[in-house]
Amino acid sequence: MANTTGEWFDKGNAYFLSGKYREAIKCYDRVIKIDPKRALVWTGKGHALNLLGKYEDAIVCYDNAIKINSQDSNT
Image (cartoon, rainbow, N blue to C red; front, side, top):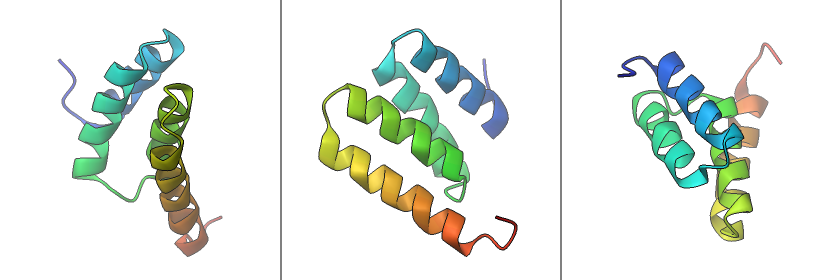
């Protein structure tokens, strides 16, 4: 069972690529709960929500990813 943020993110991506978007979102949410400053996780969750037709929720995720990236001095 996944127990680090990296493992949960990888598991979420695997679900996403398999078309299991709800399961992917659950994994992304586990990462966000632990480390809410990971823009790629917010983006992945946004993509999954978008494909489920949850456009408003997807926009919130994309906005979070943009906010995080704009605050990162390394980008």
